Length: 124
Image 1 (cartoon, rainbow, N blue to C red):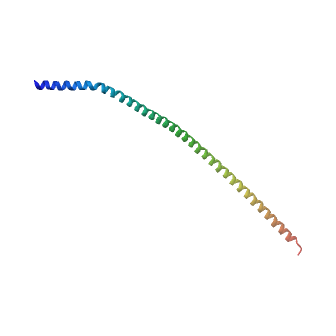
Image 2: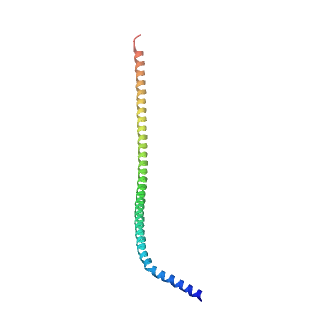
Image 3: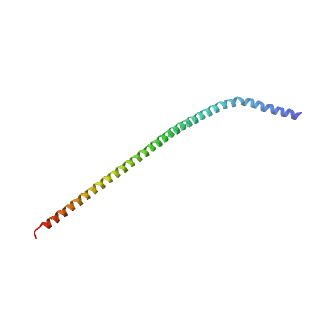
């Protein structure tokens, strides 16, 4: 029985120590809870800010992709217009050169004809 009573006394002593520590635990839990809430709130603010920044970046990326596509389309159109313009200019220059060549051939033929006519009609 002495052993049983000794175990009972130890148990009761530990229970009394636990009862004495309960208010201190409650006092410690309150600031720890407040600290945890403050830390979580601070982290949530950072996460929310990161999410807002990510959304802004996503929107800017979409805008830049659209602008890049439009710019590429306009560049293609300009290249097509310049190519067409160059082709027209080349054809115009070729036509002009052919006309000049034809005129020069006509003038040469006429000069030859005139020269032969004067040579034959010249007194010997």
